[in-house]
Image (cartoon, rainbow, N blue to C red; front, top):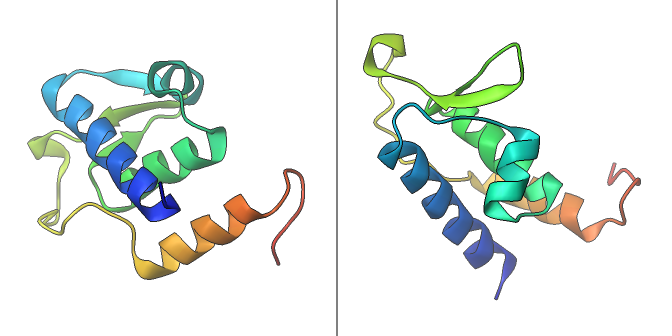
Length: 102
């Protein structure tokens, strides 16, 4: 399965779980065990959700869904990766662990 398709499937699955379980709070380590994804992929997905305003990242490291009272601007934009984020993710995943693509 192509990288983009795998990533999109994971985005949909994780977003769905956060929507279904409104009070879900999960650390990166817990998320890795729950969704069985590579750490870089999972962190990219969760941070993308933070960037677009779907999730928040607490000081203790847990990710949780923003509630309507938390939203100060519209979050009507679809949640997914921008082309730039896709390229960055694809570049980072094509590099051996511990190397920098720059």
